[in-house]
Length: 199
Image (cartoon, rainbow, N blue to C red; front, side, top):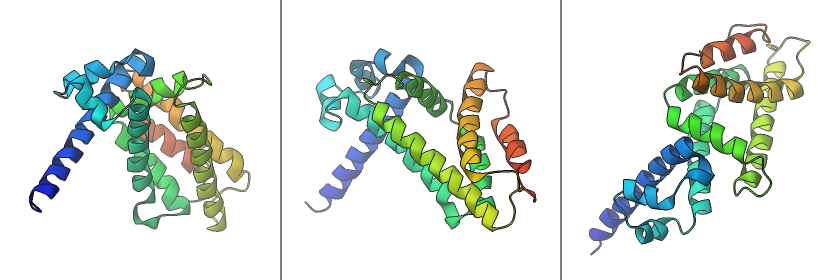
């Protein structure tokens, strides 16, 4: 009996991950409002009721997908405990990583635009996410200043907000250009112009 529990748990985790992957793809294709739980369930080989066992509402599934993406990205940005210039370099590496994750980029771009409506289920999530993202970028610039690597004319506060705006704008351009926009290259050039050292 004890041998069955871990196997069942692993199977449940694998199915949950499959649901998140399929939901991420469909939310990216159709947007949150246009996506159907029944279609997601079918793609996962589940009944509608089976899907609801894992995620009781469409809203809970969307938020789980978004939070999963954030966990992956936060782990990437924090890898090795980088700060300052190292942390800014991680933003460029994250842009390069996103160039191989069209579904995630599309999901974020579509749903973040939809979520500007106050009644959207992910509205509060995106408000909080942008506050945290800008604060994280601002901190990286402040640390870079303490390291003596930030040009005098660059203020950490506005620079942090500009960095996040540039990253998200590049994602839209990348999608519309059929993935020909060099997100990482543009981001690297932008950051390097603000530094007194190479990135």
